[in-house]
Image (cartoon, rainbow, N blue to C red; front, side):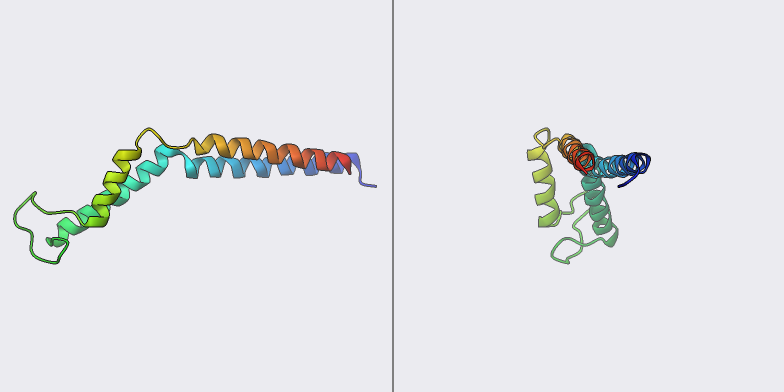
Length: 112
């Protein structure tokens, strides 16, 4: 039969691992950070196109500031505008899921 101190140590290690995992998930799915990464990605693509001096069809730009965006970039910008403020709170979903997982692990260890 396992030693109670050993079981307690395993529970503490599991809690620490779970807390770390939840923090990583919450950081990754945080709507503000997701939006920020998307904005930075789009800005980088636009800047790259501007530095090349070409339009989406490969022709030279007409003039400064008149360069068209690629269709994919324009679609991403439009989607970002449409979904602003209506995203799922994934950080809360991740925390709730982690809490449920911790409860299940705790009860499983308790039964054994």
